[in-house]
Amino acid sequence: MDMEPDDVALDDSFEIDTTVAHPARRYNYWLGGKDNFEADRASGDAWEEIYPTVKLAALENRRFLERAVTFLVKEAGIRQFLDIGAGIPSANTVHEVAQSIAPETRVVYVDNDPIVLAHARRLLSTNTPGGVTAYIHADVRDPAAILDNPDLRATLDLSRPVALMVVAVMHFVESADNPYECISTLAGALAPGSHLAMSHGTTEFLPAEQRAKFEQWVEQEERTRNRDPYRSRTEAEFAQFFEGMELVPPGIVALPDWRSELPPAERTSAADASGYCAVARIL
Image (cartoon, rainbow, N blue to C red; front, side, top):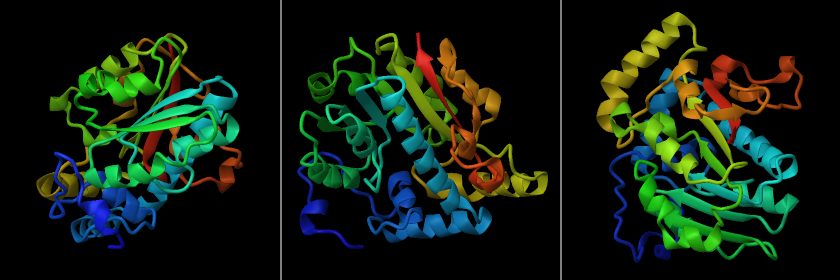
């Protein structure tokens, strides 16, 4: 793993557990990054064996994020972003896309992996003139800790619209951790006119035999070996995250289909991406 010593010797109360796969580092591996450990790569390879297009699904999540941020800045007029589960920075992050359109955009990233913190320290020095980027080490399961963080309050004005980005995150949050309440609390703290952009993994697009095999593997292997095991949700379950909000057209769709400029025949199939996504206006 190519990392500088300062990247891992963090002045932080959180410890890096290299023996257990972490979603942010595994996602980095799928995207071709080098900021991951053997456990992340082993978990990523196991995923690919049971679900061969998982790397393509990771790319489609990234593409959705780029399209959603572009829409939110250009069409919705948003100039503040709260990106939950930001992950290890790669090309076209939220602040890069947003500030390339509106340089004054302010962004707060949130993640619970100390490796992300190491990269965030470099990230904070890349703001455009007028733009601000901050990072909070926290977990979506504790929304109060995010909302009460002084760095968030110093960076974002919650009395004005904010885009809440939760891309490829909530399928790592179990029902016992109250995922709907977590999102409701975060969204409820934002001003009217704010937006929620989300994507979430699903098995609903898979053929029945592949779906059954995948779900059995998740129960027997994934849930016992990883810190944040995967939890697929149906379209109806995904829709519950947006209760009380106004969905932006085209509503809830497969990842490759949200405002894509590609003709349908050239898009990744819904089965290969295996995820739902949507953007909604907070009323």
